[in-house]
Image (cartoon, rainbow, N blue to C red; front, side):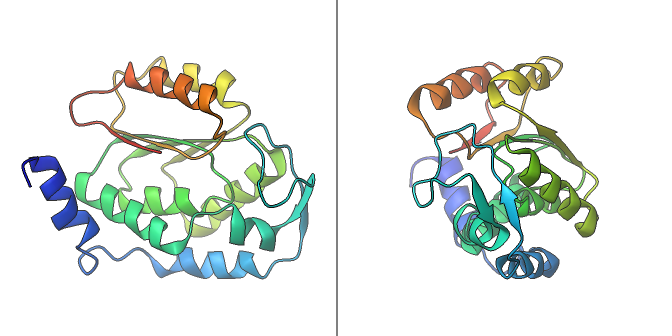
Length: 190
């Protein structure tokens, strides 16, 4: 392995599952949401769902299809726990499970997260309160409208997680905006 970053990433993030254990409350919340039959009205501003084109979805459906699986939540947790980014942007909050992993991994970080659907956004906000995560700055609206004012006052970003509006042109646009605030150690996760 020639790249020091890749070597460190493989050794201390990918393969180091013992030293970075996320709070169990996050998975407890995921299990609870996975059994919740409450129906939400969805306003999808991104690429849309491949599994369900309906405008209404149950929390159970969202928790099992739209939220990243546990293994990826744990991977993000280990990534952030190891590298300790301070300025984090997430595009695509969903129910807030992945955001919770991000925020819990570095509670001194400022986590800015954007969700397009108002009802999903409200659920996520409630989930952050339930988990006691105070370093999350959730915003509701279109990424195109909200990303520029988030980035403008920031001298730089340390990590960005792009998991919403998976269309090619918008994703490339977000990348170009984010890269303007990147430094040598910035991590971008798609």
